[in-house]
Image (cartoon, rainbow, N blue to C red; front, side, top):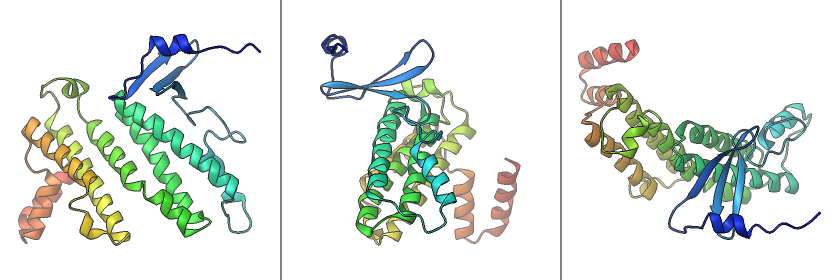
Length: 252
């Protein structure tokens, strides 16, 4: 097989170290994502595992592991080879998640973040040792951050993110704010679990999510959401107002 030089491809798409270089291409029978990296290009499938590999008919390695563990008669343990393949899947889904965020395909970014979080849960349950667990769990806050950001922005109109317009429905903006609040709660639970609660308020990811939330309030002129009002009413022991807010939430 003749060796093919990709210099021309790289020249036609210069690498910009100051931004995320991503594009989606329509091929003859499928779409693919391409990410320009220093000295090369990554090509990723849009569904299943980003490199397109299947494992005994399963769409991802995580799917294969779930199937294998359900059939295992003894306690399922991760071997060195399995850990290596898991790490490959983590990296591939990270690259594709970044692509989706850059292309504002927020629903797909949420899907890939959820895959990674579930794979992290699986690894935590079947980890070969604590050190390997910690080496992966340290990235959970960052994945949660991406997931929360994408889930919130998925509720807003795409044009709102491009220009200084305010066309999103107030109810949708409330949902976006609640996505941020739920993400912050999960992050806080994580900090408490790893006995780092004192670092939570100053954590950069927490600060960014709060800035996103307050920025949406200001841009769309939205005050406290119903859930926030309910939490405030309960805190102030205003149970009549709390009951009224619960009724309104149930109607939604």
